[in-house]
Length: 120
Figure 1 (tube, rainbow, N blue to C red):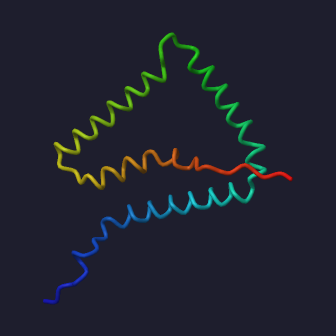
Figure 2 (figure 1 turned 135 degrees about the horizontal axis):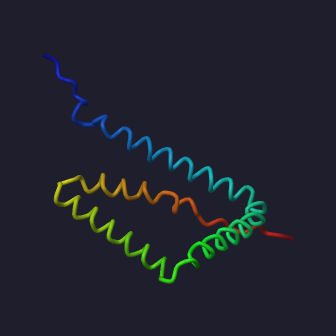
Figure 3 (figure 1 turned 90 degrees about the horizontal axis):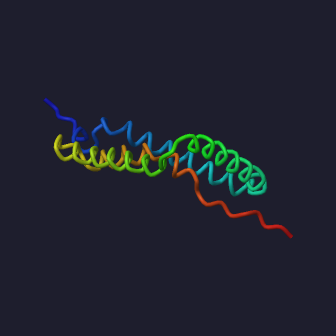
């Protein structure tokens, strides 16, 4: 029987991860190009959006009597630590685990630095 020479070199089970990483990289590049091309529009909209979000978050978190953001940070830390322990105990691939953590935090990477528009 003939064996396929590429079966072990490039397993197709990782293709979905490569495809997802490529799609997120493309979306990031498009958003950064949009931000640079339309910097004036971004500078006009960004302050309004951030003030609105800050107001909404302040109203939401002001309804409780304890430090909500510190509690959420501790919960996130416990989740990451639990995930690391599970990775070690269940012998998951650390590179795959790191990719999943990166993908779960992908929206925070969309906030790339955009230079303000130059006037004059």
